Amino acid sequence: MLERRKYPRKDLLLFANVYDSKSERIIGTLLNITLEGAMVLTESKIDQNNVMELHIKLPEDFVKKNELVFTANSRWCAPDINPEYFDVGYQFVNVSEEDGSIIQAIIEKYGFKE
Image (cartoon, rainbow, N blue to C red):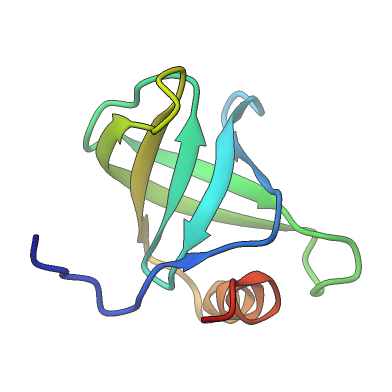
């Protein structure tokens, strides 16, 4: 399959829950992230092209903000290797320069080194 990402995915050494901003409920766990999107492990199947406002609580004393809030569009959903879960690919919508810097800091601090 042809890779269309501008930025390579970075698997993380960070355990971070991803929340639906509307309901404040956990929708899943962040698996990897790029400046353009993220993959989230969920217990429920997520419809494609579902635009949501999500947030990730950041580690204390990591950056000035205590959470990263972003609008994301679900681009795909596929069964995880564990059949009880799904992997969902989200594309970020309108990431601010500040949030882009936070995402880059997450990648640098918590990304697996290749």
